[in-house]
Image (tube, rainbow, N blue to C red; front, side):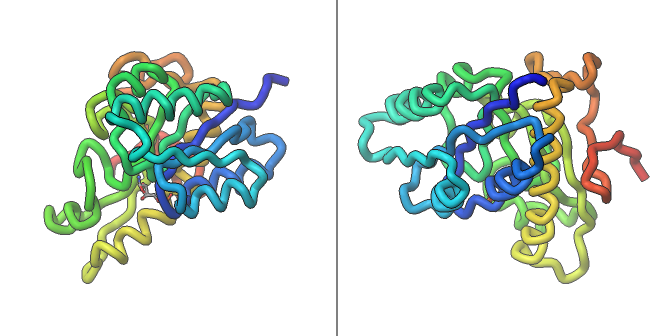
Length: 225
Ligand code: GRF
């Protein structure tokens, strides 16, 4: 059997997406292992979750570095010391500079709480409500230097309900983020998906649109209503 995919996770805060990956790993056939968790905040709950699960957890302080580039380089050195096959940004709140992204090109993904390309950046749930969309959700995409602009592997969609607030909407999106991230990591671990420039390939075929997370938490072809 092939060696399980080695994953490094970057997280700045709560770490519920990290926890979903840690929990999924309990299944022996999961095909991946988490070899390190890295944060820009020493107090991040994500680091506690990693340590509780017996995973090495490392915090680097941006204030200890003269420039963003120097911080990124130190972070990349720490990440690369655990020899990851894949870097997962799961609530990592600092923008990674171009050099850090290029260093892991094709091997770095991010989970973002909107249906990209709509609502990149911050406060995505408030953006979605202000735009009056009927559907919202989350995306897992490959990271490229442009923010939240890399090719999307898969999305989870939810309905926006009358009376939704950014908090209620965000809570329902987060519930779907967890199985979405786990499903995408499984797909990558299976070797069925890769990135070439702005295109995601699945089963050797370029995709024109992202896969969709189905009600059973499996990735399926999207069928537009
Ligand atoms: C998630 O909503 C994720 O999509 C975004 O930041 C949040 C992180 O949540 N990038 P958690 O730290 O995984 O609980």
